[in-house]
Image 1 (tube, protein in one colour):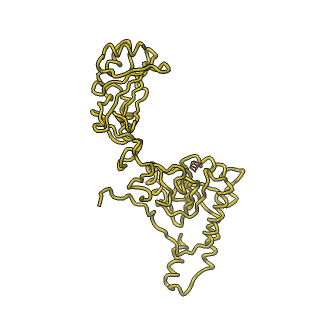
Image 2: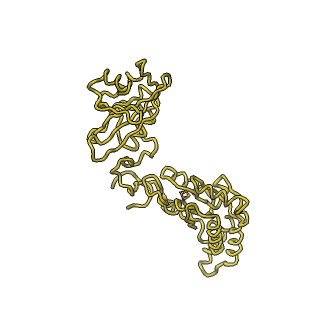
Image 3: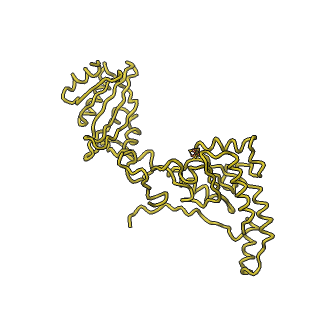
Length: 158
Length: 180
Ligand code: SF4
């Protein structure tokens, strides 16, 4: 098993739900309640030292439980290694704690995920739409957003 | 503009009994060979517009050479490329700032109908927000098609009656958000 996965499993034995290292990319899936705590440890621990949030996004697995998955891509500038952390988010309660206090880069990335998937980030300092306009209804990258739905402000009615 | 407005008042005063067709003809002839473009370019069709405007195809041959980058000095709004919802208010603002008479040229499939972007972010044809005078489809249209469209527009302008102007503001209004 990968070195990073080992370390996380050792530190948070009950929070890690699954892990894999397909194609050499070490990945863990964790409980969403523990996300900030785990991320903070990954950032501050000397052997992991993930001081950079490379990317953050979400996936909609419509029909599965939990429906959404948020994906964090971490990179350590000092140690030159990468890690991927995932957490499931249910449709009934689409919320997760924000990691903006840990990485400022998360600010706009979390706003983008809120905008397009409708996942709420608790504790985000300024959670509003970033790509679409304020009056937009719905979250268009959800798989059940009708492809030819028209917005009320612009375009012909249907 | 001045002549057009005066002419309209004369025609209105004589209440349809006199029609000044010869004046219309001369004004139309003058207008159709002196379009001042405002190129509103947002996407890939812009590459083809460069070719249209460049020396090989040379839109100058049709008297429409000079792009103005102030809408107040332009009378032909050429909309080139995909228009997103976020951009729609900007486009209507540019249109409303242009002085009359003014014409709108829909350049490319995206502008005509939304093209292949039948989705949440794209305006499904700018005729939902502006009056459009000429539609040129194609993804992107060949310069020959653009000139065909331009010549058709010139024919329209030649036939126009002064009573058509002013056309007024763009019909697009931000709809109220309150549900009835
Ligand atoms: S019509 Fe085609 S070439 Fe023109 S802007 Fe749309 S996608 Fe691009």
